[in-house]
Image (cartoon, rainbow, N blue to C red; front, side):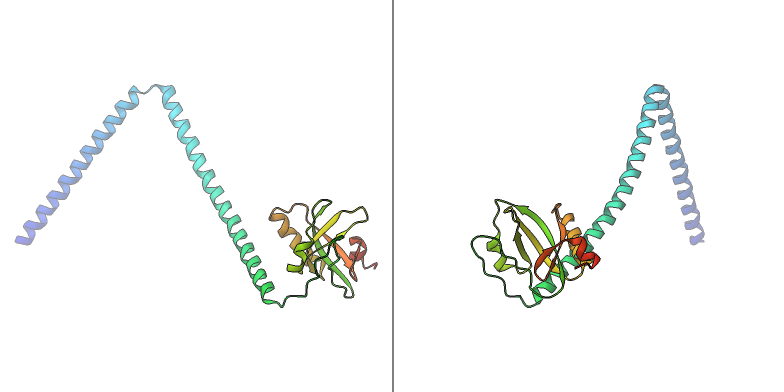
Length: 198
């Protein structure tokens, strides 16, 4: 009997709560209906258009966020690959660097047989970076007959590896980076090197 009374009381409370919620919903609907009647049609139109524009902006922002997340993931993967490459280069035994000398920029390309490729990062008349050659065996340069000093990074036996390195440099902001070729330590035409005419 007690359980029956408790169940009936609970049912009454639930029913009273739902009636009260319905009354509140009706009162709220009535208040908004009154506000709607008081609103100027042009103002209402402006509000609806503003809501649609904001909804479109939200959709666009979400799409841009997804695109940026993809770009970020790609950049993070590239950074991780470059860090791994740096660690691998640090682990390799260092080559003996050419001593820095006054005057023309020495050619620090290994004098071995065959064609090698480097990435030229700039050509300058008034910049002398020879002092940095002794600390970095992968940084070297040449002097043209007109006195322009051409600086290069890396040394590759495969053109496509050098081209990939060039692309990374361009992404990092070295927009003038491009691949050059050497044969037996002498700079040669890239077209001849690629066609095997040397």
